[in-house]
Every structure is written in structure tokens, then in C-alpha cells.
Amino acid sequence: MSDKMKTSISLPAEDEQQWRLHRMQISAQLPAYLREFHRQKARRIGLKQFSNCEQGLVRFNVYWDQETYNRLHAVAHALCMSVSHLIWQILMFVLAGGKVATVFSNYVFQPKNWSARELSYSEKLTFKSRPRGRRTRRASNIWDKPPLRFTA
Image (tube, rainbow, N blue to C red; front, side, top):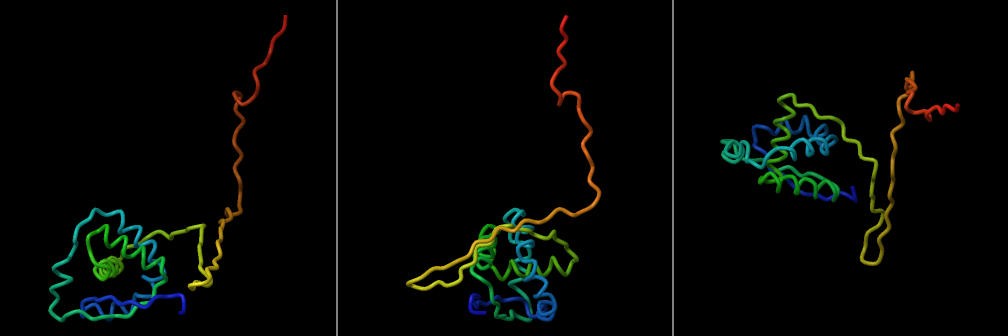
């Protein structure tokens, strides 16, 4: 976990068990959830329910890479809420049965070594192959061919 940052989030105590059950799923699909929530208008959904919980808040240590950390803060800022509140909203979305499409990004920038003296990184482009199967051919169009010339 050397390339991951340790930070913490706070969630209502009543949702502690649900977070433990769903945290791996949420972490695995976090870019898709962030894309889904970033489409929403800026509003503080459920802020009173989140901050005025009777049992209090529980703090969890989480480990994210720098890119995920930055994305979380950018989306939370755009929605005018804290990262903890955003994660709680994602958890509520998952518990309500919300589904998201898988995110595919073909560009990966990965720092290998980052110090005061050196920065080495790798860049990678990935291309999905088309599923093999029956291909359909396009019907020929008479306008694709050059016009006929008539001579007298």
C-alpha cells in the first residue's frame, strides 16, 4: 500500500455494518459512482440526516491513490458536500439497489517513483477488442460508385 494515501471518513454509526459489507464494491466501482453523482445538481441531499444522527459518527480509515482522492474531493466540492457525506450518499445509493455502468478508461498514468530527485512513470493505452461474431456487411449504394458516362 505504499502508493496509497491513508485518510479517514466519518459515517453515521447506524450504517457502520453496511459500510463494512459494501466498501469493497464501492471502492471497486468508485469512478462509476462519482460519474453518476457528478451529473447531479449541487444540493445537500440528506445533510440533516447525515449530520444529526442520534448514534453519532464513526470514523473509518481508508486508503486511496492520489487520483481517487482528487476525484472524490472535486466531486464533493462540486456538489457542496464533504467527502464523507458523498461516500454516505454512494452507500445509500448502493443500499437502495442503484446500478452504475462500468467505466472504461483507455489511458493510465502511473507514477513508479516520486521523490525530490526523481520522477519515473509509465503511461498506458488500452484498447478493447470488438466481440467476435457475425459481421454485417453494408449494402452497396449506387451513389458510392462513379457516375456512368454516355457517349454518342
